[in-house]
Image (cartoon, rainbow, N blue to C red; front, side):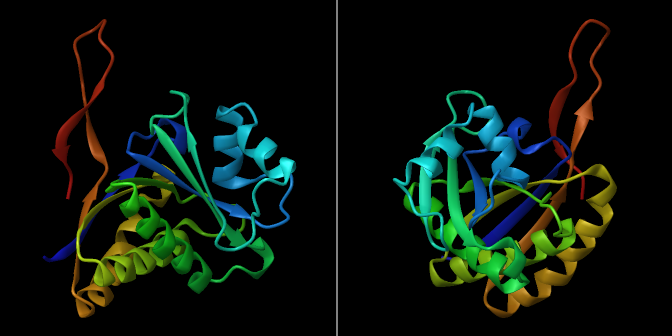
Length: 203
């Protein structure tokens, strides 16, 4: 079975981007939560913070927590993974987070993941490139297909697209294909109707 990654960009925030599982990094000793974890925690009325504060979970590197979104996110499930201290984070660390996240999501039968590329002090391009490399390693070890939806700012679309092109060559070397599908077009509806996302995808 061949492996492949389909990459789609969403210019909506993480909580408004549909998918199967929202994959969220939780940084060690970072209180209050920041970045994607903060957005998810806000939507879940502080559920993530309460779990951490209870001491029932260890948020060090490799820690894992699966939460239902109760309809407060477009993804029905949230997979939060410990990633270590933000101050010590390097691209390799984010790639390892991605690799573990993809493997854990596969155990859940999820092949459509939503990831926020907006993390404080980490460029969106770096997040996407590192995540794709980690996801590629997971797929090389366990061949399958995966749809990754990155929530990014519109201003970062072109840079992220370029990063995907660069990473694609590296993934091919390990037997993983990458198809960049861009941002779904917005279909213009007659007056009185809300615009919906078309199935046509830009290249």
